[in-house]
Length: 423
Image (cartoon, one colour):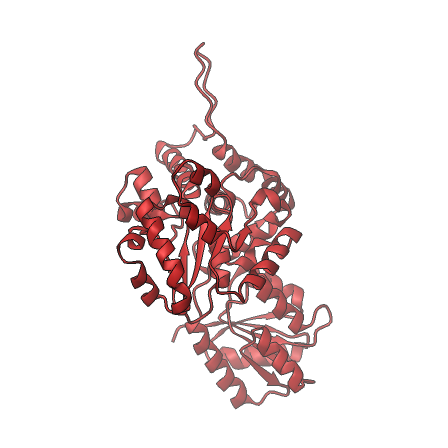
């Protein structure tokens, strides 16, 4: 049996050490935290397979920490609450927030082992961690977006999400998707022309997401219009994204006016990073957490100067570009902490290339030209593919077509470069 990592959070040293001894005897790896502050640090550095979390602690109670993990997207592991002064109301509240179970102290040995076993088995069934709306931030503009999404979630009408490429339109669509119902991100738009009603049969009571409605051909637009007219009958929610001005496309004869009118019944704007720069440090930490959880890179902390530089930088590619930069930093920085110099190095790589001087002067370059050719080529390819992924909003079919690579070859290349492709 593979050893599991269990994090025990309790302010009483006797209880911490007793639980550690019992769980280690069962073959588990155990780490201890005496308060919420230590638990936050350990959770950020690595995803535990299970957390045993005391409710009553001096710096922050366990319920508040559980809520914090939930709202920040870090509640991706089973959590069992513990308390010597528990009530039914507390247990119900903890379960509602996302706790797996509740143990009352003093904890009987058999009850502990049974609960730990059940929680670990439950953890194996939890979905793989991925970016979610919870990661977008806590700024006023993002909180308002969440409130509006909560409001439209009660409706069954089609929704048009308007925003720049890479701004997080897909995250908003996934926020509206109800658990245990069908989901389809449609990247092969010809299905709208060939058999739109087959999509509704496939997605009964589920959600259909069309990342870029402006890319639809005239025939595909007609298919979507037909699909929208029948969606309610199948209980299917349709969410469309648009990064281009649809009214202008209507004027130019490239987009169906009736379709735009139908989609315009319910619309929301998804802000770009420029509109909520204050969230960038939290976004950086969230991306780092995801990379560590998926075991792509070991944990590294960003120092304050590095976070400030990222917050003040220009991100025309929004989340996709920021994600590429963070992956680059995590994979290529040399120190234990990622510092301002590291950020400056990578941000320079995203700067536009300068034209060579005609008077014989040396051309300025965003690359480190003193490194071997292979490393320099890899740096260029990371920027190149990151640029096209940002422009395509993560649509890998479109990226493959633009860069003229077979899709399987593209995925292989991105994996070689340490970049994450959207599946």
